Each structure stands twice: as C-alpha cells, then as structure tokens.
Amino acid sequence: MNRFMSVVVIPANGRSAKTILLSRWVLVVSFGVLVGLLVFAGFGLMAWVQLKWGSGDALTQERQKRDIEHLKKKVEALIHTQDKLEFYLNQSAIYLPSSVEGDRAHQFHAQLKQLEWGHTAYSPTSQRTVVLLRQHIDQVSYVFAKTSNKLDRLKQDFAFVPSIWPLFGKICSAFGYRKHPVLGEGRLHTGVDISAWVGAPVKATADGIVCIAGWTGNYGYLVKITHRKGFSTIYGHASQVLVSVGQHVKKGQVIAQVGSTGMSTGPHLHYEVRRWGFPIRPDPFLSLNLVAASLVL
Image (cartoon, rainbow, N blue to C red; front, side, top):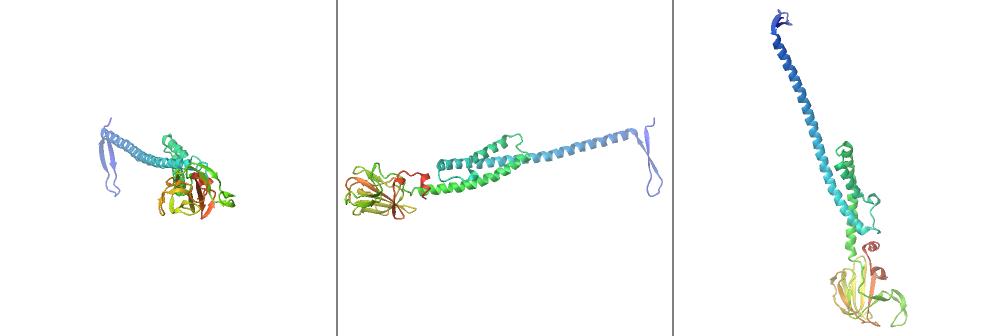
C-alpha cells in the first residue's frame, strides 16, 4: 500500500506543473485538526449567543423587578391615602370620582403580587401589564391627590365653622318668632337660649377673632366672634367676659361665664350663629361634623 499521495499543481500562467508528495498520516492529522477547529468554533458561537441573550433576559428581569418594587411603593402610598379618604368621606357628600371608586389601590396591590410571584412574571404579557398598571396608578394618584388636598382644605376651614355646643345645658327657648319674655310682644328670637348655672364656662364654637367683648345693653355682657366663610357667633347675657377685642380664639376655648345680665329673666346663655350678618338657626351647628360641614363650605 502506497503511504504517499501526489498533489499536482498546475499554474494558471501556463508554466510547467509541479508535483508535491504528501504522507497519508499528515493528511489525516490535518483533517482532524480542521474538524476540531470547526467544532470548537461552533461551540464558541453557541456559547456567545447564549451569553448575549441570557444577559439580556437577566437585565430585563432585573429592570422589571425594579419597576414592580417602585410600583409597590406607589400603591402602598395610594392605599394609605385611600384609607384616609374613606375614613373622612364615607357616606358623605364628598365622594371619590367614579373612575377610582372602590378598592382600586388594593386591586393594584393584588395585581403586583401576581406579577411578582407568578410563573410568567417577566413575559411580554406581564410587561404590558406593568405598563398599564403604571398608567392607571398615575391616574388614580392624581385624582387621590386632588381629593386629599380638598379634604385638607376642608379640615382647615372646618376649624372656623361653628360646630360644637357653647356649653353644657338644655335649650329652653328655640330660634324663631316667640312672645318676648320681658316685653310681652311677638319678636324674632335670633338665637337659642341654653339654660345653665351662673358661672358655667362658655366656649367658642369655632376659631376666630373677637370683635366685641363687653357690655352691649339688652344682651348684657356679650362676646361676638367673627369666623371665616361669613360666619359669626354671639354669646350674650354673660356674667363675666374672659377675652378682649382683637384676640384670636380657638374652637373649645373658654371665652365667658354664664350670667343673667341685660334683658334677661334668669341665668342662661343667648347663643347666635350668623352668616353674612343674618341670623340663622343655630341648631344644626351645635353638633356639626366634617361631612355635614362640607355642605355649607
């Protein structure tokens, strides 16, 4: 058996051909090396492709994880805001717009949990869900912020609205036309009379500024306080005035003591609520809550 092979090389320029003798084992080894190189290159290419796409998936997953964590924080803030709003606005005239009624924030939280723990958490479908969630959460956050700001303003204004009893007692003469107990003729009673003992503490029913504090004739010793939104309150027939004109007072602060000064038949407090200077029924303002106050603010 011949151990050599002849390779004839014929030049293209017409020169004489050349013969090269090659050993068979050299050819076998060369072929083996070539096949080995091709296999190595193939595995290298596969590893490069896998590394490239694998790292891309890892980056996508990491990015979506961050998105979900960020959305979770926003949703938790929404839940806190929603709970606060529901506490004050439940069964009230102030309501959440229909687009965010119900437990929307809690629904968002449940959806995020499904995305976070689901088997397809990083699929294209879940990525679209994250995008839609982000849009919905931003919309609800905007509406919640507006409603929360409205609530905060209402709470601030509520401090200046008459909303409590000026003293502990019982109404002995209501608002409206009556026979005057001293003059004996029909007149409009512009407030309510609350019976109490001499010296009983009289409280301001809203924040405001004292504009009258002293003797006024028929009302005897009187305190008048101006508030916001056109409200003012009057406390008459006091035995002693404990504030002065221009003084800022807080709701619940003691401003006078019950007496029977002026045109009076016995110890009591004459209490008035006025709006834009006109007397109105004080009864609804004796136990006014934030919800009811929203109807007059």
